[in-house]
Length: 247
Image (cartoon, rainbow, N blue to C red; front, side, top):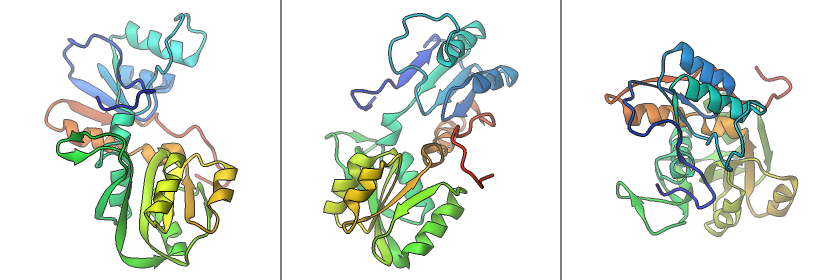
């Protein structure tokens, strides 16, 4: 519900009428994650990124995606993905990033639709202000500590920053709106070289690992499902991207 038109959120594999007792929470569905669900006797995997984006023409085990589908079906494990509907919820991906960085008063950055989720706005990214201005270098250090990552690329902006725009995952389409709303810095993932170049002199850009920016969707699902079913955060789920010098 409220997903982007190009997205494929929702039930990926399984019987929507099945009784669910235990769910494994993950960003990505991989063979290791499905096998982890088998070992933990989970009957549902809830992922952020959909396992299936395009229609499958066959399920023959020739690709990791096909093997995941096959493994899940054989072991009666349903797979559900909540992607852009979680991305665009005010208190979803970007909102959680804002909270983690100490931004308490934030709003939707790009209003994509005239609809609400539990009386909250829906759109791309968020924008808000820190209680006090901080040095740009201090913000970089805060991001490194809060998200426990050394994968940070950036271009400089103001020496001190206070108004911050954020879009978890790949959010380069929010740069222009962040500039229009006079944000000092825009934080997202998967930025291209020329996007950095074009933003110089207009706004600071901070680029981080896609998985790192979204892995706490698992915590959001755990909170939403508390008291309804047992949930376990996957230990097999991790970013496939390796950085020299990182853990």
